[in-house]
Amino acid sequence: MTGLKQELMDRVSRDLDDIEKALRASLTPHLDLVAQTAGHLIFSGGKRLRPLLNMLCARLCGYTDEFIKRFSTIVEFLHAATLLHDDVVDGASMRRGKPAAHLIYGAPVTVLVGDFLLARALSIAAETKNPKIIGVIADITESMCQGEIVQLIRKGDVGLTESQYMDVIRRKTGFLIQGACQTGAIIAGAPEDVEQKLAAFGFHIGVVFQIADDLLDYTSDTQALGKTIGADLKEGKLTLPVIYSLDKAAPADRQWMTNLIQRMSFSDGEFQRLVRLLHQYGGIHYCQEIALSRVNQAREIMDTFAPSETRDTLTMIAEYTLNRKS
Image 1 (cartoon, rainbow, N blue to C red):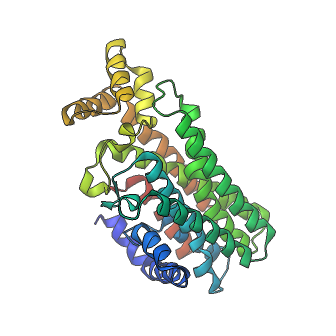
Image 2: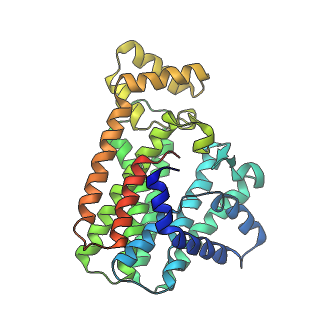
């Protein structure tokens, strides 16, 4: 564990324990099959970044009610639902180092449990009786579905542009993490300007998280990442390192990359050649620069808040998101 990760874990270990207990409590009263299927994914080592950001942003705004523990599970349930659905759509074989849920429980059960988690998130949001919170959660749910549909439509499309890609990750990842931070401010009754600052902070973190995830597909290994390396490409998903490198590549290399992408299958040797081309044409470096710029913007937002342990922890999360290895 790196020094930054260890320090961050030391700071948030109690919050993470509270989140785990709240997740289990929220699933326990329901059908065993629901709890088993959802639990297979939810309790398999997720980072809990989204509920943690929700709790910390509420705390930064002075919220101390115990309800935040239950409230924070909303964004984790939304996230888990999209992963369950994604793995069915993509035919994924592994998630978080374990067989994907649909391989164990079947696609029909997995899809229905994903639907249940979406409904569970909205149900908990409704407990607040706050129309603004309910609206934000509903908008996130709709946006994530739109992102998935667009990604499915553009599957294997080597003409996907950077702006089109950014729109997909804005919908799939950015809005959810933005909403985690924003609803933390809303439930705390924070002023509008503070709510908008934390929403912007969360959006930057969301973009960094997704770009870092895209990079890990080409810079990590299966054991560390918890899913098959090269899975994005085998599923026809073009991510930013590939999009940028395709645009910069010499014609012969671009044609070779295009054939590989459209084939959606490749040997280890072909994948390693692709990684070398991503370095050669600057795709890896470009993504790192984009992510660093977003982290710096997130830091600048945190610097507008009064010094506190919570503010420092949020800044550390931004830095960890950029530098994570899995």
